[in-house]
Length: 331
Ligand code: ZN
Image (tube, rainbow, N blue to C red; front, side):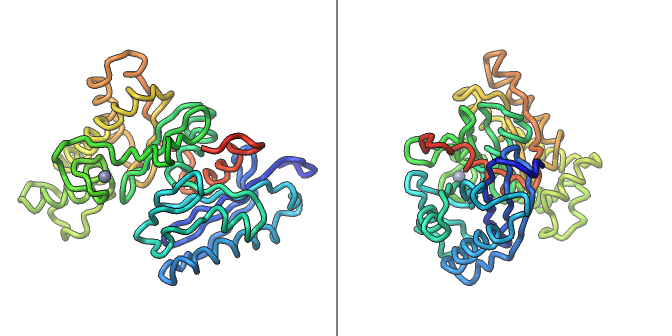
C-alpha cells in the first residue's frame, strides 16, 4: 500500500445473523484492516444498529497510521433483506435479524457517523465485489448467484448494481423454474431457491433417502444429511448424490438461461457455500445453458466460481461506496 497516499477508502460492513464483519476497503479492493464483532441479533434491531454505528466510529478511531480520516469517503453496508434503494430503508429484514425491518439505515449512518452511506442487499454487494475485483475482474455486466441457505442474486450492469424501478431487481433465486413446483419461502411455488439452495439440495437428498433409495447417505441420520455431505458423496461416485447435485444444476440452468437471454452478461458467477460443489454443479449448468439458450454468443457465456470467498461481503460493501462516488446518480 502507498503510505504517503491520497487514495480514497471506504468502510465496508457485512451484517450477518451471527457476526458483523467490517473492513477498510481500498480502491483496489484490498482490505488494509478488518474487524469482527458478534451481531447480538437476539437483543433486537435497535441494538444491532447501535453496534453497527459504534463499529464505524471504532474503525475511524483505529485507522491504520497511513490512512487519514478525511481519506475515508463513505460507509457501505451489505445486509440480508430487501431494501428500498431510493430511501436506504430496510423494507423487509431477514428472519435471523429480527426488529430491523423499517429501519432507515442510510440516514441513521449519515446522521450518526457523518459520512455518506450506501446500503444494499448482501447478494448485490457480493455481485458488485465479484464484478469489480473477483471472478469478473472489471466486467461491466454480470449476473451472480449465492448458493447458501437460500439462493441470492445480483445483477451488475455498467459496473454498477442494477436496482430496477423500485430497488428490488436481481432477486434471481426467485425466478420460477417449475410452474406449480415446490413451495418457496417467498410465497411462490417453483422458484430456483427450493431446488438449488444448499437447503434445497439437502432436503432433496433426505427425501430420496427416506423413500428408500440406495445411497451412502442412508447410513447417516436424516438431519445430518447436508449439502456438504451430498457433495462429498457425489465426489465419491454415489449415484443418488450425483443425481441430486445434477438436479440442482438443472434448475439453476433453467433460471440462469432466462437471466442470460434478458441481459447477455459477460459471465455468470456462482458463489456461497453451495459453490463448493464446483464443477459437479457448474457442468450441469453449462449443459443446460447450451440446450436452452439459442444464440451462440449467449450460449457460451462463462459460468465461473466466485473468487473473493467470505471477504466478498465486506469488499462488496466498500464497492457500493466507490461505484456511487462523485455525485454519480444513485440507483
Ligand atoms: Zn421464491
